Amino acid sequence: MTTIAALGYRMPSLPVWAFALLAGCSSGGSDCPPGGPPCGTTFDVTSPAAVASTQTFATVSIGNWHSCMTSTTGAAWCWGSNERGQLGAASAQHCMGGNIDCSAVPLAVGGAQAFASIASSEIHSCGLTAAGAAWCWGIAAQLGDGGTGAGAVLLPVAVAGGHAFTKIVASTSAPMTCGFEADGSPWCWGSGFGFGTKGPTPSATPLRWNAIANIAWTQFAIGQGHACGLDGAGKAWCVGSSLNGLLGDGSGLASATPVAVAGAHVFREVVAAIEHTCALDVDGQAWCWGQGAGLGSGGPAGAVQPTPVAVAGGLHFVHLAAGNSRSCGLAADGSAWCWGEGYGGTLGDGTTAQRLTPVAVSGNHHFVALGGGGISTCGIDSAGKAWCWGSNETGAVGVPMP
Image (cartoon, rainbow, N blue to C red; front, side, top):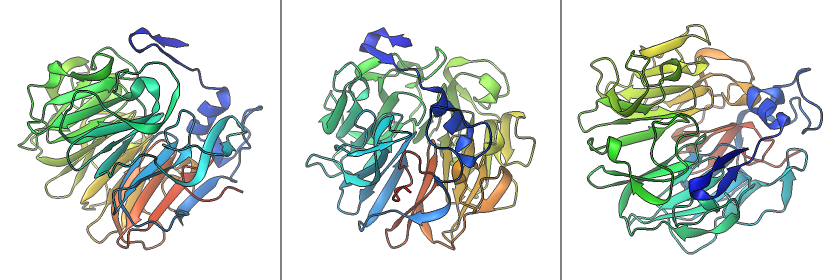
């Protein structure tokens, strides 16, 4: 067990079957370990499935093993793993062989707040009101209100400091959240990066991340051991671990201060995952760097790409989403395209196959929003209806379990 003394939280070790799930055991095969949930294709949702809800949704954020959306009225709804209260409501189901609390149908997050956006992380979630106030729920040590320990907090608590944030950003794979004020200054809380020593200082309340505050960030994304963002000119900068080319500058050197991503690109969006980062340029071309099938360049899945490489296929996107070992793009016509590892059906093309270049998400949906996370991917169509695909072993797809 790893002790995060500053927050009084001891990170629990995951059982072997949990790691096998993330590695793809839910896609079947003899590698499924004993003592865990049933493996095979039972929980694989390989094409978009309608989430069991009548709500009209507006925004989406996918965590590691759970999913959240806000409705057009500002209500927050979450489903999937509820191990530490990250759904914001009590749940009666038990998933993954009875090992964790969960809900396969959306639950209304408690409290009276109306949220303009939402950010889902490993085992906590946060919402941002129209006035810029951040509220969080889930594991006590990650909520930004000064709490510590691993207890579950089901109702949203106000993030300390009275900040007025314009956006909040969480990582699906690192126990931290950051809020950005109108001038682009970053304030972060939680345990910091999941690995490496170049991230923000662990803090139970928002602490200014001074090492990166020299840039007025317009976009920001957090991986596991790194983070990347855009300045006002569309230039990309990254900070943290350089493992397998994560910083995109080609140097191979970790950095506690932002380094410029290689190339003369002008980007308008950036997304990050554990092994890779992708950015969308002003012409709609996606570029990725790091390692893994989520790069989408058509190259070997294990190859390291230390500087941006163009996603293959000649597609143009208006929005990107990244998840564990995969990426997705939303085209102007509302079609969704994904590439990377397809375990559990996370690419949505009707298979669990690996795809090294973009493939169309099945169903001819017209999406207006897209989100990727640990084991599921979700989209919101033009009517506000939610659709998800991937592994439903924790209920993260939002459809009833078998």
